[in-house]
Image (tube, rainbow over all chains, first blue to last red; front, top):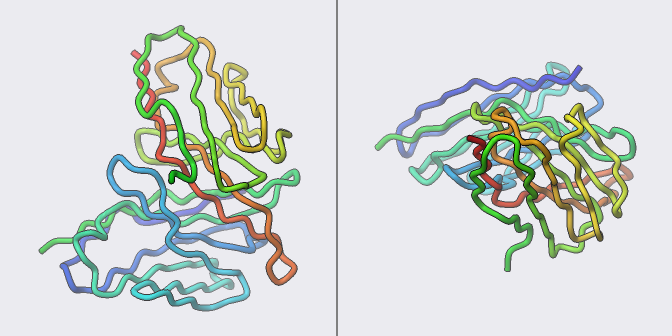
Length: 113
Length: 118
């Protein structure tokens, strides 16, 4: 079955690094995604990583993938108050000709001054 | 220019009513989706259409009927609304791409429709 787990809350101080973790179960997932949802808003794609990669860096964002342990993490360097949001990881799987995203439970990131 | 748009943004209605939510994308994508986000922020796919053809139908009550008049539109009609239908409904779209000979379809989401059933 598909089950994507995340810790529910993370609180950091402005300027520190944030690390949001995710575990997934579908070993056939070819792409894994990170989305950001600000209060009352839709989902914004942050980044994604192909399953044959270990790491991907995009400005302040670093994604690490441990395929053996099915563990994905998102590191945000120099966290700012504008980074406060819910962060969702998602794994993709092909089903019936379509690409289905299974989302994690979401991690609420709170950035304190 | 909005890439994926939904109407209405808010919808408050009585139990038992029938309502529709509309979604349009101007990205030229060939696949569209409906997701439901419950009060605990849990997101789950409901339907997916590719070129107007239903390709994903998760365990969703028959009261929910998606309709895709063309590739750019995917509407969601809900009959006999129940209290448990209260949620945020997100539309998304994607385009099939082959990267490294593997299928990759990044999904872009609309702003959501907040449905409250009283």
